Structures are given as C-alpha cells and as structure tokens.
Length: 438
Ligand code: S3P
Image 1 (cartoon, rainbow, N blue to C red):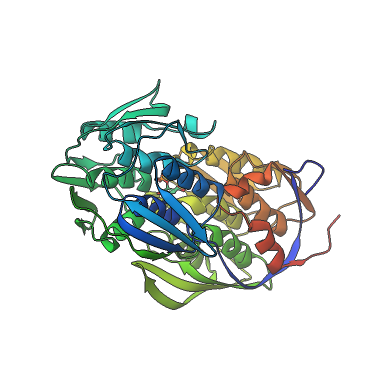
Image 2: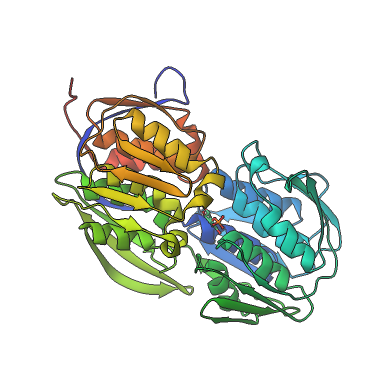
C-alpha cells in the first residue's frame, strides 16, 4: 500500500504461475444464506464467500431473527421456515450489495411485518423500480424515495402469483420475484429476454421447492416449505476471471484454478476468450448441489484477436466486462461490446469508469451508450488511476497494472473487499516480478 492505506501500488509482473482456489461464489453464497434462513431445518454451508456484501446479507438475516453460527470452514443456519422471520428492530443495511436489497425485498414483501432496507451512497442511487413495480403487481406494499430509490419501506402481506416478463435480463430481479413467489397464492411465472444466471432456480429445486423451468420461463408455486440442505459453494467464477484474463495475456503464464463454479449461465467470458484465441481447459468436471464445478486451466498465448460481443451474450458475462476490456487492450484489432447498458447502473457507471481509467493508461477505448469499442493497443503504461469505489473496476485496474509497463497506483482500492477480500494475497502468490520500465 502507498501512504494512504486505501491506495495500492502495482508493478509489472513477468508471468502468472501456479495453482489456487477462490473463495465461494458471491451470488450463490447470498442465495444460500437467504434461502437457508427461510428453509425448514438446519443447513450447513461449506465455502461461503466472506466479502463485505455477504457480511451485509448475514447481518440482515440475523436482524430478522435468524441464528447463524460459524465453525471453522462451515456456516450453520437455523432455518425459520417461510413464516418464521421476525420484524427487525431497526433499518436493514444492505451496504453496497444490490443482490441483498433486491432479493431480500422479495422475501420481505410477503412477511407479516414492516421493514426498511437501505444501503450505502452507491446502492441508494441504483434503480429499484425493477423490483418495486412487479412486486407491487403481486400485492406488495413498498414505498421508496422519488425515482424508486432506496431506502425502501416494505409493509409485507399476502401476495398473489403473476406472470411477468422482465424488461431487462436480471438475475436479481428474477430471484426477487421467485422468492416472493414461494409465498404467493397460486403460480408465479417469470420470463426473461435472455437467460441470466440461474442459481436461484437451481437452489430452489435442490431445496425441494415447487419450481419448473422451461427454456426462458420459470414457474414457482407458492405455499410449499423449502428444505434445509448441506451446501457446497463452488469457487467464484467472477473472481477467478481476473486471474484467467491476466494469465491469458501475460507471456509465459500458466494458472490452474480449482473447483470453480462453471454454471453455463455464468461462463460467457470463457467462451469469448476462447473465441479470441486463448488457451483454456476445463477438467475434473462435476455437479455438486445442482451447480457445475470444474478446474480451469489457462495458459498465455502470443496472439489474441479482438471480438464482437452482443446483447444476448451480455447477461452471461456481465460482471466480467471490466476484465474483458483489459484483455481486449492487448488483442489484435477491435473488440466491440454492445447491449451492455446495464453496466451503467452497477456499483458505478462501469462503461464510463473503464473508458476513463484505461484510457489514462494509454488504452484506445471509445465510449458507446450501451458498451464500448476497444482498439487493441498491445500495451498499457502504468499511471495513477481511480477505482470509482467499485470492486470490479479496482480489480480490473490491478490486472491492467501487472500487464502494463511501469508502475500503477490505484486510488481507493480498498473496495475490493466487497467481493474478494484475499485478492492481493492470491495475486502475490502467483505473480512473478518484471523489472520496471522507465
Ligand atoms: C447478480 C446478478 C447480476 C450481477 C451481480 C450479481 C446476482 O446483476 O451483475 O453482480 O447475484 O443475482 P443483475 O441482476 O442486475 O443483472
């Protein structure tokens, strides 16, 4: 770290080498904690992710009366059943976590009590209309600030099943409605324009909910209790992606990441890298707790080609666009990312943040309303950049820093703790050092 604790200095690396495991997948961890809390019986979770977003979810569930105990590498959750949560005595703080606020709103809409959800300055700017409106159609009473912004006040009550087509593919919104659907009278049906991550559907079926999935439509029948389970959370693909991207570019690299979640609705980034010419292998494939798991091996390649990625693919690699933008700076030719307007309403406006910060490092990226056009520059140069207080922007810049010539300083890099608290230790373990260029 440099003088200010939150800043981080990075020097170029010679290669990335080694074997490692990631902490548990963030999306699956949130769902396991929330669903285990409303299940019947005691669940045991192995491999939970412990970034700040997850701590926010656990704190909210504890404030709703759920008992959560940690014992070594296991987390035990005493499920309350669908109707057993208690009214929280104070506001529930989701901190920076959109997943917590949106998914939990679905559950709270059906409770026989009053609750208020808030978050940090970033979360209080993010769009909540996408859950407030459909939950309202189910009968939920939710009040918000002007523009459907949090804090959200929820007076829970009886819900009814609806049929709803999501205007944008969003796993958080879909999950919120499916969880509300567990409580609703009749059947709730949700349709997506393009498939987004399906962890909720898989977990609900693993926990014996009355759920049916056919192509793009999911139906859940309300009123049936879900069952506690023993969960194994696979390694976080979105965290692994930073090392996969770095190793694909950096000459002489060879990295193996074990037991990573490779759910097809999450692995669009691997397909894109392979299309760009990257050398990637998946081995030891397995299905654990209804999720696909594998070891991912990646080796650097001398030439990556630019690609065009469009709308339908975006939900399958949404969180990997920051690292894809970095990789594309080293590919030959142009990379065009379209249909990714959703990036503008993440923890920060990620399209703008990537264009501004990577261009400071000598990238040639043109900002588009719904994405970006990246002209491979073949190199980046170290300089001072800013995280925009967004964990994925900070990590993408860290990888840009090890690929760049010279020294990079990332201001406010502490936000990486949101999803990847041991990022620097892991990076340190696999990186070789390259003499600094003047
Ligand atoms: C998530 C869904 C995605 C993703 C986010 C996690 C989830 O968001 O970007 O990091 O766990 O459901 P959207 O639902 O807004 O697309």
